[in-house]
Length: 167
Image (cartoon, rainbow, N blue to C red):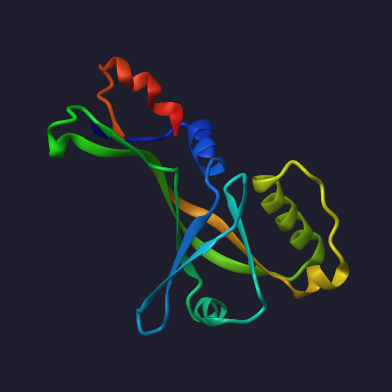
């Protein structure tokens, strides 16, 4: 089983849309890593995140806005030979993105970000009260670098390769 790079935009977006959370990594001024699982929205190379107005992550990002965001599909245990331990792998796809957080203050853009996030999880249209929009901290991350991989995939010559889109 192999690891393959993913370069097709449609496949990358399919992987992102299949994820329920992303992990956002950042580093404080002493270089200590800090990683948060977060809900997200995604559209056209922008990852939208939201949080409270204050907190540890906000303090870190005000000093260093660089982030690394990862997505991973639900892994599935697969093997080539049930009796051979080293033939076991996790079948999944992952994406690693790098960018910088810009905090959004404009209420119209905040609503667009919240709509993007809700589209990730629901097919519903929502309205937001003015205090809710005013009190949420919106993080906009323009993706500067993206790397996507599928791993635990049978060889491309294998008949099982066609099953790779199950995750």
